[in-house]
Amino acid sequence: MFRRRDWTRVGPQIYVPSELAEDALTILDAARLRLPPSAVFSGLTAAWLHGLGTSPTPVEMTIPPGIPISARAGMILRKRALEDAEVAVLQGRRLTSVPRTLADVSAHSTLTEAVVVVDTALRLRRTNLQLLAAAAEAAEGRPGVAMFRRVLFHAEPKSGSHMETRLRMVIVLGGLPRPEAQVEIRNARGVILGRPDLYYPHKRLGIEFDGGLHRDLLVEDNRRQNLLLEAGVHLLRFTASDVYSRPDQIVAQVRAMLLA
Image (cartoon, rainbow, N blue to C red; front, side, top):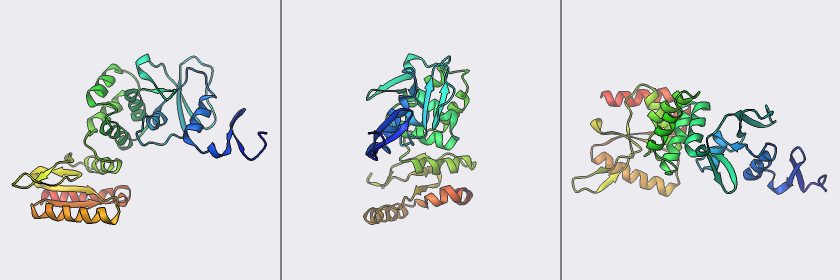
């Protein structure tokens, strides 16, 4: 029966219906069967299960020290002792808690990408900075905790999107002052004219990530931009191409506007 095309092998003696072979949760459940019951999903896989917009694969899992397993093909396997409070259960799947997940992501990701994940957790109210600071303090002396503290220093609960965080980190890591996030700009009557992604109040400089939205939203963006310009707010807009390919130009343009 398993030789038929409607079944796909996803692991040693593990088969699933072929239409589910690419399903992320099916892949995770199949990976889980290859490890002892004490194993938990961790890292970016746990972040995905917590709804933080990461990729679930390659599957990352943590097992207690002392288990005689060193590796599994197609998986990232780590051996660490976890406290009971560091393990959660979501829809029957054991995974690291949000604070522990973010600490692990910080230890194994670049600074910017770790901040992206932490900002997402804060924006979705999966946790808060106070709980994360307490988790960092409790983990004092553990490998990676210094990086976790650095990530928390740059975290921004008001960040509106992954790309907004990446744009902010380009600016900050370029040596410029940290801009405020999602500041409401009002006119003399108190009417909200707009809310730039990033803002320098002392220079009335707004910075926005342009994600190439639908034409109707673009029209609304243009109207909002015109209102901000009329109110004396200068605006810079950047795209994903700028963030990934021309970060130095972003820093140079923002610096020039701040010095003007």
